[in-house]
Image 1: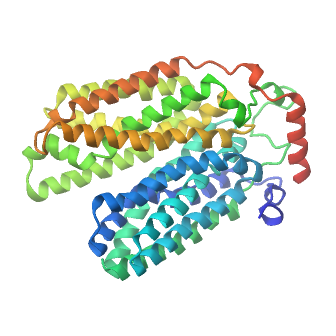
Image 2 (image 1 turned 30 degrees about the horizontal axis):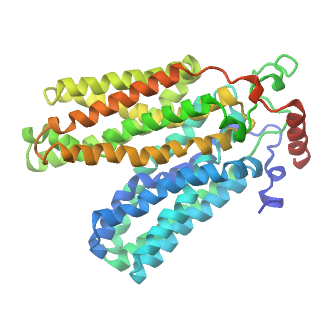
Length: 454
């Protein structure tokens, strides 16, 4: 897989090839792996068929998110070196195989195979697939990196919109028995494998002399004067760890609403509604939050190309903290204000994921931005543990269900504090010291190596 069909030399775009074919290639992967956001559908299927607990059926998803961050960090340099076709192919094999192994586990009554399949093997596919198109998109869209990564990562947020009806439809067709759930995993594994293959078959990298339309001539814009920091060296900079804090705390604050969306709405407004009306309102609230999460990834990250990365994170973190304050102060007295605040918080949550690759590119350059992005995603893994801890353990400690908005005062206050810390971290970011840049000889060697392979 390291050479021939999967080598960079086989995917150099010919003259006249449209760069707008790269975002669909990235979307083919991200829309598939975004299925992780719809795990709750398969989780309920497992509970119905296998009589498993909610805690047990959460394990595959939790392990998948942990493996997403770890595999992105561990394999980030390989993804950068071998190129997007190799990375997307490996992601396809791992993610699809995770479903097939899970299907075998359900069919044979071995739930540990579901944990290993979906959680471990599929989680590796999640991590590699998530970072696979990043540096390629930035090379094609050096003039609009926020928009480019926003398009792809929007697909990850929107993957649940595809997976939810697909999962429900398959479970309804096959039945919520062990055989039906196993068949659902099997069909989804095959379907996602085929769909993701469109990505690695379509993706291309730009030729060495290619430049974005209307870009300055090479003589006007020296490529070797911009930042170029290796993934190893990036870990030694304060900028990397400030961005780690920003991503971790912004994600944690978003999870504060996303993870508890249904019970949160019931606590705030359940008393004012009853029966089917409440059920419909809760479903609409969850769907609208998911849509805000998806659209925010594109809208706000595209806006960052105009206003700058630091300014857009001031919006995510500063305004996000203020919106949590509004929710605390208003309580359940105004449903419209509550909804607007929640929508913006979730849009900032999604946008934080989409904008961070462009922020990395601004600070560290495109030299090994994919590998640096992979290491930074360990912040997501940490947030995946921290967020549920805050919104579950602390909320439950405040009283039983039905107590009302007061159960969330401590939890939301913590979210505000985390966002303020993230805001301060963003203010501390400065350009990376040139001492961390790779030397001219390394730049030349890398350019020569890539040029020869092409």
